[in-house]
Image 1 (cartoon, rainbow, N blue to C red):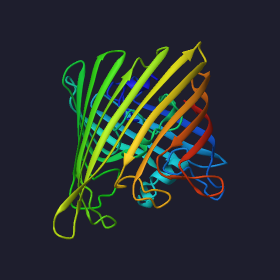
Image 2 (cartoon, one colour):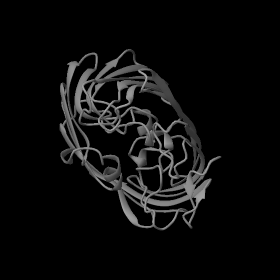
Image 3 (cartoon, one colour):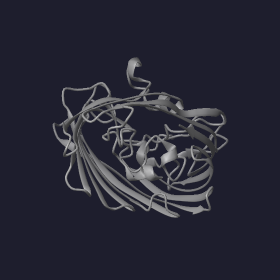
Image 4 (cartoon, rainbow, N blue to C red):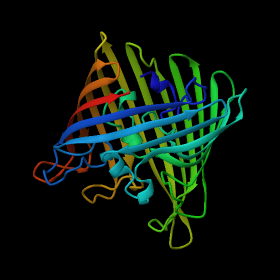
Length: 355
């Protein structure tokens, strides 16, 4: 969980020179899930992470290759698994298996200012694709509907020992290949008042028009999250965000479509091996900017409650069980008979190992 006090991406902590500039790591995330929908529906609806149903699957497996000196760093992470298949489905074939691929140069070694370019990890929300770094195995709805990866350049600028700023110039909202003639802008402000707290504020502004969404205009997004006491006996994290998608109307006017979410996650450790985690969340997207209802309902909103049990087998091996209940005022799910339902149940087990 100490990873949660860093930016939630694979690019963290690469600035310090090492005696051996080349390091190699690896990661394997296996899972078996069951959800209460019909057997013919193989995937858990509304999710790209660990979503396969009633089969043993690889969520994410990757090799982590880093080369880092005082003034140069390179990061290459080829990845495989059901997460990659679902989340990179719209990318060109040459990019479908790249979790990250970036190179950076130090603009000021003394001040720690870096410029990185390529496929970058995303700063948005307090959860990334790397499940071992987070309190619950399954992802909240929040990170499922923000970019998991970005394509562009990132400027890292330490402002003080407790505050670091990051600026992004991007091809767009989770897209490696640019879909239009406009670039997007992102920012991140990271505040660490002490070694037990991280407060992070992110923004995104970009034109999201594309051949598949000609009516889309500018998208505005911001999120704020807090992580308290990572690695301690009790850990807490919470995240809130909201977005506005402007769309072009036939009369030359524009309309605004909003979505928002809030969640809170806590974990309690027992001894060296066991921990119990819980989550509460709510997601609302009345105009279906991010989520299209499974049953053709003209809006989306849902809440969920989850409980997870973790057993730390070794320092680099983790076994997890989790149960998650979804509930909505409208029929956003399907039951085992394939009928529309206001609720759904998701049970999942996981084994993760890394080096």
